[in-house]
Length: 334
Length: 281
Image (cartoon, rainbow over all chains, first blue to last red; front, side, top):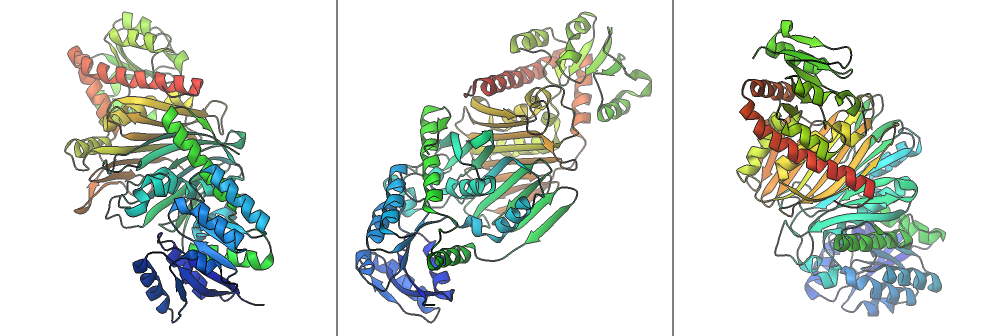
């Protein structure tokens, strides 16, 4: 089988580095090019790639990269506001697209992206990697095996340090603050575990950790899923700057026969039924996400985290922002 | 103070019986098999609102009543009973060493201005559920929440009966008047050996956290590093009842408790209202 030829577009988000590393390491992938408009970031990316003994073509304009015939798929990790434009350009160049989370800054944009990719016959995946964290796999395996029975409620956190700078805190480029940036991870897990779509959101959000920001940095949501299932998410950027972990993604699921709780960044699972067990892992979720995306293209099937999955994250984010404004529960656009 | 103590209102009274025995001695403590007309006693009533129907009568008969949970079905009725002066509501978290440590650290500015408070209390399925989860167990965590973050400007509550006939789980999100955001999760639907208390107060300068599943220490994390405080201390119920017994001797002390009870009751009934209206209150 010929390798899948992949390229990286934009290193504005640090997420591009683990994806680049995965592209360099996966046997079925040939990493052929990168693009970034910023010369410093481009140089950093090239230096990173050289550490793996590789060298690739580097472009200032991503459209030059898209013009190459020998690129099958691209990974886009630009500021959120650029996801829409870059994905449409890539799809029209007949490249499969793995787009960083959040898929876009508006549900209508996400719908556009899904439609264009479908029309062009290319796959659209959302780079929302938490499903690929081994802790979450193991939780999923246990839940699917019925260890906790039917799911009754979900309580999640998806927090981060109060240190984000650059485009993350510029609303016109990011689309918002912590709500936009973080709920997609926890929501994706809640949807994946429950198999249910969110139908309504109540949210509180404020700018308190760093009052000088022009986006919100603390928030909490109550989400009602289909069938009345309730999930809660804390997406705050409120971890202290010297917090020992990069972020914090946790999920506690109460079932009819037990409770299971996973700490993705702490890499531990606690499952309580009759006994309690702790398990530890140390593998890269980005590697497995990229692997799944590449395998999906080669097999001609949808990736595990599709454009629709990313789109629901955007739609729920929009409903959350509307709830913050209205102080009422707001419906999620399906 | 030599009033006898009568404990009534249902099962699950071992802890308070032990506390009273320790505080006033065996000769003055009795457990009533059913609710009745008591006079000139300290009546500790546990259970649902049905168990509390005689509170007005006990008050008229010179009893001091210690009520676990709200004393009546509405805020107005509860306030009226409180204003009679010889009614105390059980709010053990306010006497809990962990919460007092947290409050002290917050008051001393250890974490800067408070920006988020999370309080999660997960109880096992066997926990008694006299009424809804909010009526049975809501008063104390709501009081604790306010002790940590101040007055509440807005609260949105979702109640669910996940595993029991009555509503057994509550999710609440809201804002303090300071602007800080809070999250409260309270459930009596967890497996038999789950009894978990998690508290997190995040401020502009650091983080205070307690997780009974991990250890018994309160952890303060700031730019200077992490500090652990011993949070295991005398049981909060014992500390609270000792204080309440002093109120029997000195009725003027009741005023302070009444204010805190009023504040907690107001928030409790707003929470109930929010859950029913499906809107914040």
